[in-house]
Length: 126
Image (cartoon, rainbow, N blue to C red; front, side):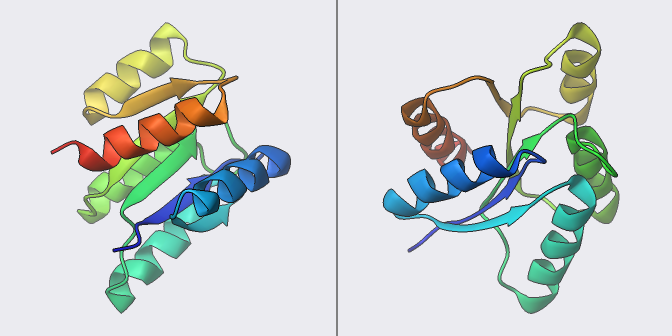
């Protein structure tokens, strides 16, 4: 079974690199430049029954942050595994993520091998 991964980051080059490496490793990838675009895609995927297996999201983005995306998913009752990637994991963000639940976190910059490991770990988690 091919796993569906949505990559949410406002940095186009990083999004593209992650898409390439995940595709090479057998994942089906989709992307969004901010939380609002991602939320729209996630809601549509839920309606069609083609849900994402994992959301990889940055925290700091225009229009809707990664934390706001996660909060919106909770409000809508959408349960999906989430891997947070960020270069700005300060105490405030860490506390907000802990309040929202347990998510895997990968701090930027990271090697693509680390990304693949975290994706596999996130998908294997109960």
